[in-house]
Length: 213
Image 1 (cartoon, helix red, strand yellow):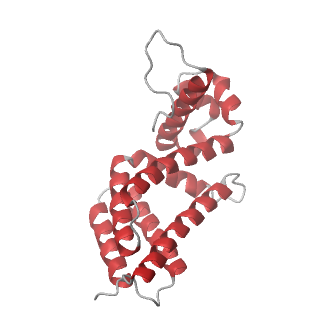
Image 2 (image 1 turned 45 degrees about the vertical axis):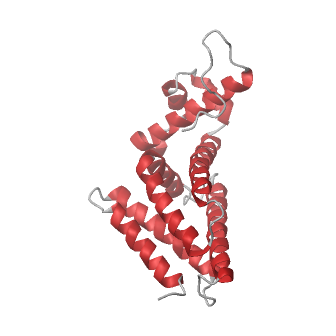
Image 3 (image 1 turned 180 degrees about the horizontal axis):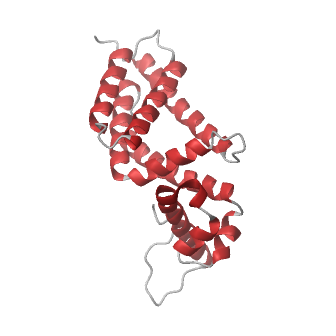
């Protein structure tokens, strides 16, 4: 989890209030990810997060207000890590090239941050509960991701690399449905061949979209 603005400071230089707040949030989010992966939703309490991150019991409650507020922040922070990585790798690529880079980047992200992927999927699953207070955040995340994929497809249709008859929005839905399905299978099946699944998914997407057969 990136350490926000809490960069290493000389030991004799006190942190500002903003730096202390950012550091506390980073530590508590990290503690929440660890707890989600070890004890699940029920065990990830604000008290447990405060204790695990080395702060007073009440600080997590003061900082996030509720478990829903905490989970919204956790999702936001984990999503930001992925979004930053993807943006760096994509640059101005579009069309089939963008989709290839995005799939390869996601596999790399999953391998480097399996704790984020598991915690994210736990929270996505909890968002299916009708009483979930952070379901709108999950809904918004998927909307933004689908819009990005649809934009790549439209870009490819304009530059001639993607077939004109392709429906960009439907492809975006299938794209994220595929990634989520692959990751769900990997998370529950230790022997699942993650790399092969990503490679097959990438090749199938390219075959479906590309004008060159």
